[in-house]
Image 1 (cartoon, rainbow, N blue to C red):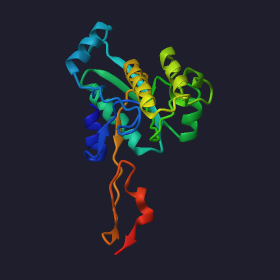
Image 2: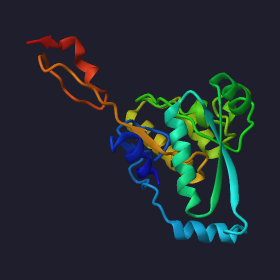
Image 3: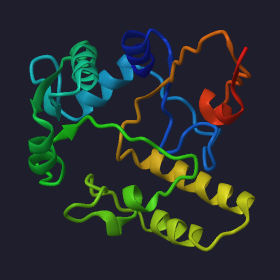
Image 4: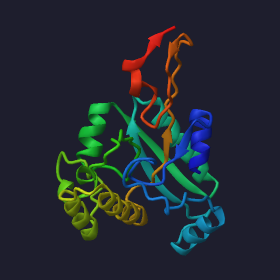
Length: 216
């Protein structure tokens, strides 16, 4: 329940994440719907896979111990999945050990991490299969030949509309493959002295026009 994550962690100041590119940026695919919670369907799928209350499905989720928010995410997911008799074990470790043993070492079942994404996406490092190597950021081992082709094609596209269409297709394919469970995007909340103007909220944040700011 991604909306519950936003409500608990950020008091509602955030959005459910729908895929690999930020809403409002090039490549965001509006046709991709927000995932819905369906506990009955989840129970049915688990039962079809051979799991129930008497034979529960269990897995481990790893994250870094110096990030309280990610630990809280793990605990909320643990609580949510308990409702359908899925057992989640939480594993935390210091950041460098987490990177070395879990991320780059690929020693995990599932993990919780976060990305800071630019307005102009560069999907190569996260989603191209060539980045599935030691030290690479495609540490989930994602591989889709069509996505590879579209990423490579995007590197020679100059026309913004064509690039947007190309990235939207990448967005849709990745979401359908589910290499990640995309969770949430927190809002950025800023406070400014009322004597400062002109403050113009923007997708880029309030600092985009700071060279024009004056104190009244």
